[in-house]
Image 1: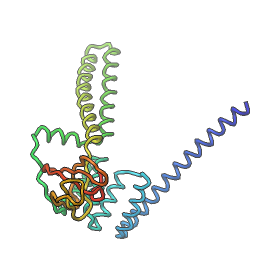
Image 2: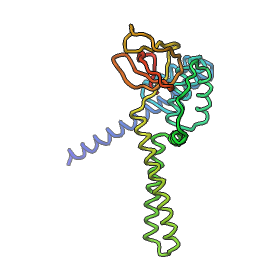
Image 3: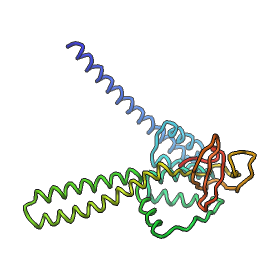
Image 4: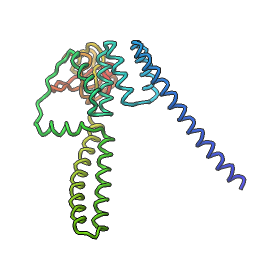
Length: 258
């Protein structure tokens, strides 16, 4: 009996310690975030960026953190890092007007203006629909339609009036259609995030090589802020593909993954 009480007491103390530790960590992160914001308000953009980066090093991520860090780098003229963090913020919160606006301003300052390969209008429409929500957003939407299907089924079988059964039937059919669409978008979104990696060039000027070798011939030159697809890696080299189809290799330090 005594051992049982001691065991439960230990579990309670352990649980309380974990809760207190997580609460203190959250408070510490919030304190650093406020400190960085204060430094930004004082126009100390480089110091603010350092504090924001320290939060990232602690695996603390949020839309506001990436957005504020992007602003801090933009104010310093570090366009590559600014675009990188705006893109990371947009990945968590697609459709955010402030992020889209600031990202557009930063992209105006980039040197490379790559013409993308033309896409069929249906693919453009699909990509636009896919970008409306993040992966978690589409997950919640699919789950909401699933619940709606269950509700419609419940009303259909429990309702004693034919009119309500008809409403429940049509509601269920519509919910099934939108559930299938949202699940399809969720699967595509998941596949895209798992298999398609994109990055931002952060160095002012990068000589892209034909092969992963510093003695290889130059394929082309790109500049900071350019978004590229990351296709392969070999030692310290990363294979990139531009929006116009050009392919080459650059050092991993020249690019950061979104």
